[in-house]
Length: 328
Image (cartoon, rainbow, N blue to C red; front, side):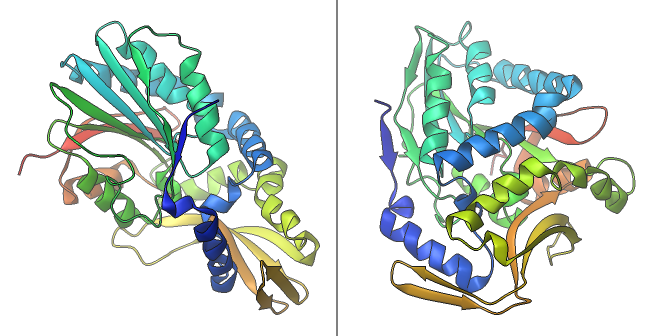
């Protein structure tokens, strides 16, 4: 039995409210693409097939260098690793493996919006069989709707030790300022953050985004994103397309969006709550922000985060950066 703590943001009642709000607003919250074991399996298959961290050996080497840079910063005998949006947990497991020989006391808390993902990540860490590793209960919570990220994580001080947070694969699906503000508020002096960002390769930002859209507009991604439509029996009610949009952000970022356009009227009955939508209505199923390295640097500085190292693959499709909270 995998020990899990369910935060109120992921209680059945709150999940139902968020689902209704998603369809009312015509924008599906990202968490509903990871809600069921079937969706988790579809995402893991997609990740294995298209994520540079899995398919590009140069990208894997960049992650490895980032892990090593992080471990070098960890000079105290106690470390608590917290995986924010841990997904399948392979990256955190590798970081724990590298840290184990030099740090006598390790703790690890996997956290995710998906119960299935938390379970997979916990099991991934168990496979390491590290004698100096203590596995804490996984935390299932919704980072998007939780304003204070310290509360679900029981953010008390750790004697003679530090915390390292990972935030892998999460930045694309968050509004940039929201994510960086909450990360900055979460980190205490002496804590570290290892995070990744999806990049738009090349000097031309827009051309770079166009060059990677195939990582989204493919059969595996379609299957994953359409699962929520299948579950609510509206998959045949419209068509799915991908586009590049320019939301209003302070940093002039663009994102790839998956739009489901209805070809007929629909009516959903969500536990007694009726949601209707007319033909030609567009539902934002998913979005993913793409960054350039200079944008990451600018945002980190503006949020009081000191960049210690940045690693990326030669193709410039993904970056991993290590930072800590600047002293006030």
